[in-house]
Length: 343
Image (cartoon, rainbow, N blue to C red):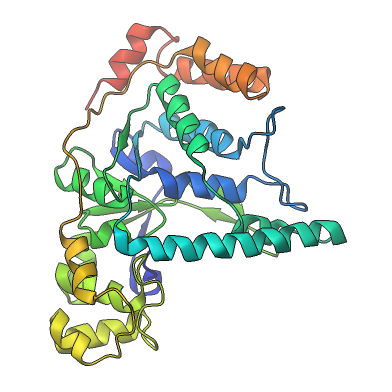
């Protein structure tokens, strides 16, 4: 879910090519969930599957969308979630229960012959097998990935603060609460996008949010941004404080200034203390043990993985591989290494 503050945050819309040469730490789970929800049959809601019945929507999205990023000159590194904090586990359990309800409604809608895509999207699950297959695909594409000890967005923010990457990439705003200097949104959904429940398509472009500028515009500091997020609701207290949306939360934070005063003025009902959540955003578990090396793609393994193992079209996959190789200089390993090795 992530903290919902989009209606008070000013973002700068850009083109994908404006990010050429930039290293971006992408929240892998956030991105894979997008692929799992979007890449489905519009009527039945069924995801893509191979001949063995394994879901492959995430692989399709990861392969084709990441290719778009590479062709634009972007250097992505995917960051995978680790162990969630204990106080998030209740939220995760609640989400699992909601997915089971959605799954039942999905099955019932299909039986009635009704459009079931909405229920199917709500029932989407990212399994360990999907995560591992995604990492394998990235390896064959020569793209680095990082295993976070805890929250992926916290690790993305950490890498951005160290200037190992230019920005964090996610649809959620949590990386800003974790202190990422920049957030890039819409990376994986750039292009034409269908408006839900309408036969209307809109153009979606990447957008950048700069933390310092946002804080200045809002008239608050980093600690107050975290407090505001907690009032609105985070992954650790999804319901937030009753009656507090972004605007009202911002007003209270400006008035009360710090966490203790803010909490004294609201009816805090969450089992998790506001202070515990606040401290987690300030100092989440992260790791310095990662290597950011973009390697030449392995065309043979990539083709075998996508076509032989998961039944993707050999013609389409081969075309994309050739396209990537041509983009990086006639497809030789030396030329690929020369392009991808640049900072």
